[in-house]
Image (cartoon, rainbow, N blue to C red):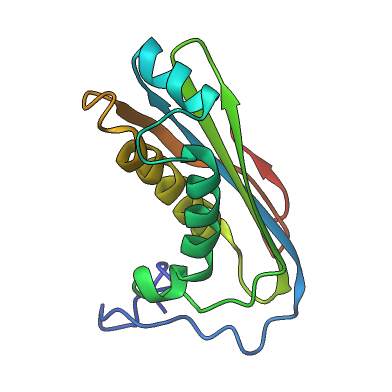
Length: 156
């Protein structure tokens, strides 16, 4: 058996069979930031962006993306998520996005949290690009995961 679970003995990619695994509570948090001009940040905070409610739209986009992860990422299982949350925190010249996904199931939700965070960041860019085309998305990463065989992990 290959050490990589998505490869069979011949090296061909396949979806991992999780049928025999027990269902456990699972949670993942992922996040990243988008840096922008002070003017763009002020407009987003004030709700004055030309395309409308940037953060409200980004929150919905992130939630929708988490629900579609199994369709977007090859070999990801389609999951019946229990909850997805997308939160925002303003910095001096950036917005930090944190997405949390959870379920009780047989496989983790790391990819769902990462997908939610990345699509929320992309949506902020799309909604605010008229204000600042030079925005930079950075630092997308898994922040925490709980549940399953590997237990609890927190990024350093």
